[in-house]
Length: 177
Image (cartoon, rainbow, N blue to C red; front, side, top):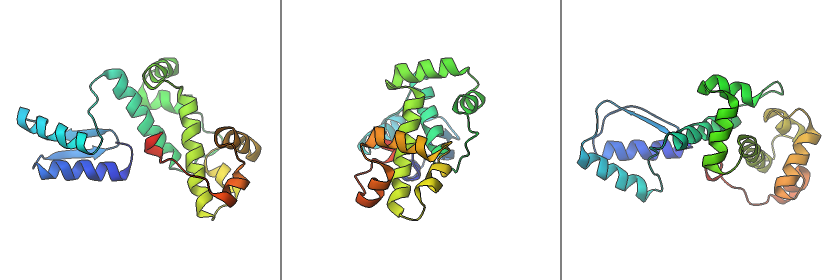
């Protein structure tokens, strides 16, 4: 689960089967009680119908948790003092090289590359609103300079942020990255 819509869908499925939960968050469900075999089967079937699957492998779970955490970060305003490795190490209580190794092995791409893709997709969203100018968007997404933002944007999309704002090319939702 990586978006509010996903959380809502999971909550509806749990309520449909009268399963009491403490909380449902991005990538995480905490239940009051263990599920019966029948409940587990029903829930798994319903999750699969909407394109969700349970993660039982520890590396997959850690990778999913990192992805959810990064999506949350991208949806907040950042500043240029933001250091990805520091905040991930603090959040997940592992050294960054371990997190990076697990993520790359499981996801097939580095944390940094994934984070850049998220920021570019978020910038596409902000550009499509046509409210903020390019420098404001770069600042909101934690870029140290507009030129750095523009280079990354163009390298991933093939167009500059300025041209994108005029043309509004197709976006990918953050959960599909």
